[in-house]
Amino acid sequence: MEPDQSRDYGQIQTDWSGCSGPQEIGELSLTVVATEIACWACEEMVRDEPDANGYIRCGHCGLAFRPSLPAPRERYDQDYFDQYSGGSYTELEPYRRHEARVRLKLIPRSRLEGNRLLEIGSAAGYFLDEAGRAGWRAVGVEPSGEVARYAREELGVEVRTGFAEDVNLDQFSPDVVCAWHVIEHIPDPSGILVSIRKALANPGCLLIEVPNGASLRAQCEGDEWVPLEPDVHVAQWTPPAMRTLLERAGFSRVETETVPFVTYIASRMRRAPRRVLLAIRQRRWLSDPHPSGNELIRAIAWKAD
Image 1 (tube, one colour):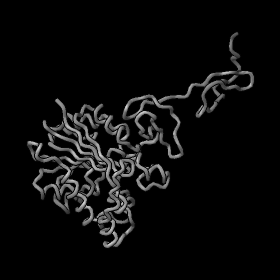
Image 2 (cartoon, helix red, strand yellow; image 1 turned 90 degrees about the vertical axis):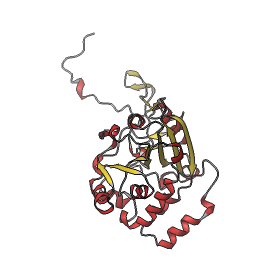
Image 3 (cartoon, rainbow, N blue to C red; image 1 turned 60 degrees about the vertical axis):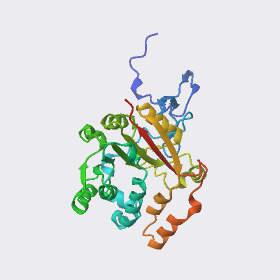
Image 4 (cartoon, helix red, strand yellow; image 1 turned 180 degrees about the vertical axis):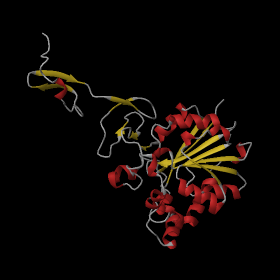
């Protein structure tokens, strides 16, 4: 039978989101198949059914990701750093420097042949400055022009303004690349990780730190979990997902561990007195040995030829 040309079929609109299986509309019977999307970490197909925060969770590796709402580039300005630091970002300089010195100790320097360090998302440059004092030839890449300018003018460190995916990383040929709390901001980060691996010297390694979306506290607190931040974190990583992502990007000898999230929580305490920050840092009971109890994932991955 020929369709009725007088009828405007373009006016028929139906929302099939969240529907699957047989559906009936009047005399019309259809079978609706739920759409699927590839997981950013393991590439398994996942049903496109986001939760209240917009995350889609992979049942294979546990990654929760937001493909429909990547963080806009213009978000990362001075206001962003102040908002997520609980005040002025630079007010916490002593604490940031302590954190930087702790992180520098994580680099397996004895296994590297050179001293070139590249930091992705270098913020105000405190880690770069401490790295320089420790003998590293350190360069940073930072999308926020305001904090990058602060790093150059106030600290005298070398920072290129821009997003990592827009910068030719090969020009740096670093021995080590550090990405502290960056990967959770990047939609489908496999591409940038491949670029980092190719840019690395050999031997060379990548160090990553992200919130642990599989931690016990994350599961218990749900929407109230401090590091969730769905407005800016486009993914909530788990140790298996991070390991799979790095291996898929071509890295070898991938190692992951989970550690307490003391530094993250302290940095977000609005104008916390110095004695409070010190007390938090010294509370040994926060070092929960249970792998799901720690709220940070740290990973180190080596370049493979």
